[in-house]
Image 1: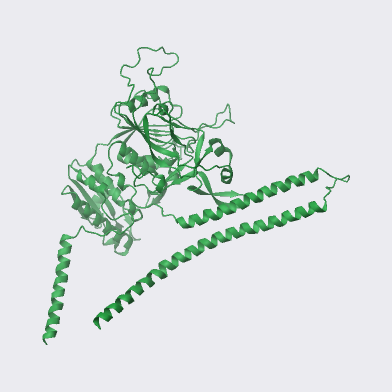
Image 2: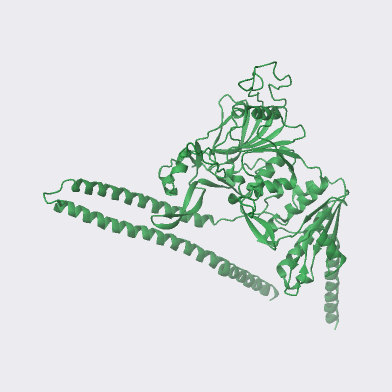
Amino acid sequence: MQTKSQTLGSILIAVVLFIGFNIISNETLTSSRLDVTENSLYTLSDGTRGVLSKLDEPVTLRFYFSAQQFATLPQYLNYGKRVRDLLEEYVAEADGKLNLQVIEPEPFSEAEDQAVGYGIEQLPLNATGDMGYLGLAGTNATDDELAIPFLNPDREDALEYEISKLVYTLANPQKRVIGLITDLALNGGQPTAPDQPGAPAWASISQLKELFDVRDLARDVTAIEPDIDTLLVVHPKDLPAKTLYAIDQFVLRGGKAMVFVDPLAEEDRPEQDPNNPMAMPKVDSTLEPLFKAWGIQVATDKIIGDPKDAVRVSFSGSRGPQEVEYLPWIQLHDASMNRDDFITSQLQGVNVGTAGRIETLKDATTKLTPLLLSGPTAGLLERDAIFFVRDPNGLRESFVPGKEQLVIAARVTGAAATAYPDGPPLAEQEKRGPGDPNQLKQAKDGINVIVVADTDLLADRFWVRIERFLNMQVPNPFANNADFLVNAIDNLGGNDDLISLRSRGEYARPFEVVEAIKRDAESQFREREQALRAKLAETETKLREIQQGKGAEGEAILTAEQRKEIELFRAEQIRTRKELRAVQHELGKNIEQLGTRLKWMNIGLIPLLLAVIAIVVGAIRHRRWA
């Protein structure tokens, strides 16, 4: 009887301890969490902590979350809870400078009117017209308002960045001014017809405008206004000398600049010269003589090609539709990023198209710090070959791989002199006067410039898909091109807090083993194909030689030896084609086997291992109790 009482007492004590532990943990451990994801997607980052620690005035966040309406929509319900938990961590980290209100807007309520007033998107839930809300609105001490109309569950990897950007913008309502000089239609184009909309602005520039005051400057500007913090120059084609001088002086007096040039800007589509319709269009850009003064050069007639990291494109050739690697389009990952620089340390991937190479001049006084590089086997292609060679396979046949990484984007810092030591450039009809008394001959504290030898990485097609959702245009990025741009502008202005947040999750997780199998098999296929073409060309030459020795009656005289040689070639041709088909079959077989192994590991092996562990643990416990 006593034993039974002791057992009941032990159970009661255990229940009390269990309840007490839960109560204490709920009160004291609400912000603790264990994040085992590869990229720590669910841990508040140092960048967010930096933003919150610099809050001078309180910021109020209103999270509109229709939890009851989302009861039948687990995707929205679970994601809303995830957002709420993350916002509570923001509040805990902000030391009283961040206020959070979680609001559930009921139909026809003031809360619903308030949500609509802030611009929160209405989500239709059913045919009866019920609406749900999943958005965030923020205000600061001066009544500035900002909102994230819809927190898309498909963009969870960007959640922390979106929230931190909203808080940062409210805490810093005075935006930095970015001066933009460009010969591309970055801000969109004019409509081609009265009933047609104009081309939209590039998404990378739209993202830049969310954080900065981007001011368009004329291409013939003679001075950079002093309130401009950073200068952004994109595709400068034959800028006037007075504009080059203005940029020169702006950089020497301590102004920051980011320059995009290109040996072949694919998004530049100039009008054809009616006087010379056969002339090649001018689609290259440079910033000479400023580059020379900064100690660098970017050739306008060479383009980087990289067989290892080339983008696969669809091409209809002699064998029909196929996927081939297009050497001038390159996917930069891992070792192609400078992990020691804030701008690229957190990026996952950047796509470039027909990019140039940045080199240091021998007499340079500046330091070149690479930010984006090609792979070690990249080489240089002639720019004109890109125009005339329509078959991507043709580029591969003439390609010579290199032995070192080539610089595509770099930071240029250090001592630099003016590109105009004799004074401001003058027009031909002008006479040189006393010059500019305020001209700087040397940089005051050294220059800080970022140069990128590609403009196409800013274009939408290289990094983002614009999708429509509930009458909204939602950007769905598959590369970090825009993050690279915004990171660089942020870093030039001295702010690194948001940089670590822009690309914390992987946009794409390629199957590297599968890609390696494809590349190896296609390499074998390409070598066999080239050998067959060479053999075919040789035989056709021999046949032409035979046809030149016709008999009196106009018929080609073929010896038995020549007929035998032709038959041997035809047999070799058939045998080679079978081998090509075998290579293709082996390619598919290897990929299928790999997929089978992965499925078996995920579906069968892991549960089997757990079952074995459970059996072993159970056996050990049984022996102890016995």
